[in-house]
Image (cartoon, rainbow, N blue to C red; front, side):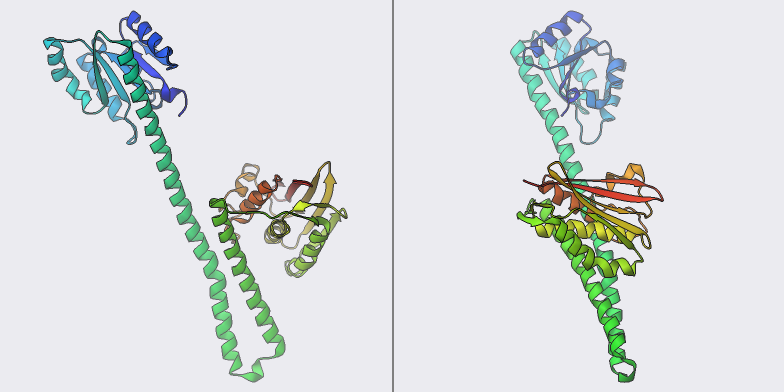
Length: 374
């Protein structure tokens, strides 16, 4: 709760009363602000009031109606507490019954009779400010729960679509193979190999989707753990480039490398491999038939790796957003939108970082910094 939410708004026609109340509150570090009229009060945004302290002489019938409208205009979660300072006696009781019930029903009102004891006023103000703070805590909790529900529903929707696509392809491929088996003359070894290669590709895709979903679950529960060991990142990078060669060639991509030898550090081999796989997959996906440049060098105490493509590029406003969950560079390309999010989480666990540089139509460059020592 910010400072405005915890301040007391004073509406006391007698300036001396406002000064005395402000002095009492200040002793306990409660900030206050003095207003001159109900109209001025009603011009305040509801978030600017932690508690409102009003002297009864500040109220008129019109003023009460205005205050009532102001209170009714609050958000459903908000209920600004009010302390009303009233005099004692029969006259005050009639005033309370005839005029105050208009807004008492719409507000969180505490009546304090004068003359006031400073301790009584201070105690009431602190109780109501704590109540106001809880309102904001409940609001924030509801917001986070609503957001979590929205994220979950979006995840289920995207995941269902992405899982269904390779499953549908596998089903069709299996049905086709079954029909061809019944005609041995049509099932050549070359056709069988091609169909099996396609099946393996779809299974790999499913495996990647499931791994991403499991990683998201581990991240959300704080169970994504890394196991560091000293290894040669240069060798791993070269090995992965070789492993990805069929995919690069299938997409028509050419590879250019500038890899410094013997870049050795303490990292989780499997997780860093996952990071590189994500960057290679993205480069292939978003820059088919283009050159991809892979670099690695030591700068000070960091290994600096980059994967640069000449693809569609990313708008500058989206360079940070693409590292969030379910965000993709382009809506026309399939995927859960989790790869870069998981990549950043893995690098964070290594005390490393990743950033993207890009220009629309000219490509993107993803740059990773990894400390050589933890």
